[in-house]
Length: 530
Image (cartoon, rainbow, N blue to C red):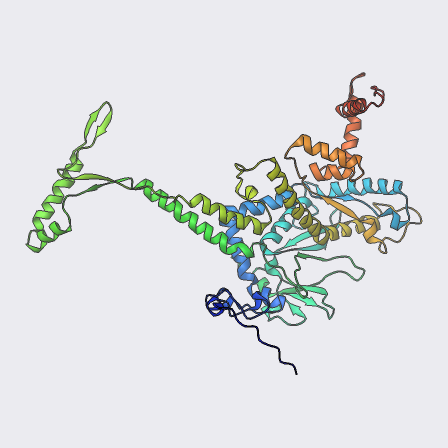
């Protein structure tokens, strides 16, 4: 064997290591000899071993912060409003190429399905909700809010024969998903979910009542019901959406988990500063007596207690009887001989409070996936470029989460509803069309539309949208959904009706815009008849 010569150590290397700047491992991240890393010894565990034992406490803390912390409540509300909004709905795009059908059929099918979905989902009678409490868009918003706070959204697809549309959705509190009799987790039963050998969640166990409910007069908290993930032919029965970050994960963890500590500390610090400011405002001034501790001690030690009490009685009587002298309507307070007025120094909140709070909120905003300006509603240091850059970054994250939630929670519900519509004959497929269940995803393929991105500069945004369409990089349908959250088909139908109602010889604003565009480019001038 050949001996490898040792590399001579430089002078001062030992001192450098002692100071905590030199390591002994190739990766500093794995070195325990560095002072800054010596106490940082987390263990590698299975993902469910990390989440399930701590999930209930993390969820309870996240719920408490959202209830009582304004920043947490505001951050959650902003994301729900931006990702789901008030009218989260599908924009049907049946894959007519995969089905071997025509694009004309796809257009007619899209219009018919979307019209029936609107009647079902937006029904003010809330017949789509098993509990008849919310229409479908609001149920989606509630489910997404639950996902943000608790890490997962749960729903059950029920069948109610007495309703016009029998498919209904029931949102379920994640607390009810648990092992029967609160048993320990096992290899094939973890967090209330039965898992197959391939790692598939095949059934869910739901407690029939919350264990902490005030009405403890039933046995429901100690009864469980097993519900299969789907029926034999594939109709979904349980909707379970969460962020899966590692292989083997069966339950989700709150999105607030990484920032719970900072939210709690910021809340406590703000409360202490506010209390100090209130105390300073209440105790604005005080009266100082000329009798110090030495005088009082001398009076009592010499048996002069009566003298001290007489002195205090005289002072009290003086301040109680003396109403003060008024000059020009203002009262001049007279002081007892040798008394002085003292003022409380109002140095709170601390001068660094605003900067400190901004730094903490930036960390919290990053954890929530939004910008500091959005979380704090502070736009004082924002210009168009920075606002535009922030919107692009934040919108990219929101779009990804919207797509994931739509595919994992909303789309299976929509597929179950469409199945009922087809099987009951409300929506008729053309003769020779492929079997519905064999091409279920192709028939129900959809893009889900929520609130639009909005505008930082409306003129520039509209011009950029027109350029993307002109270059073939986008479509009018995509731009309408992206910028304003509207349906292009509905827009065009309304525009056609408005053009028909315009007085003779008057151009609709849309026609006028195109006329100006064509005239500017040297093209033919448009007439009202065009």
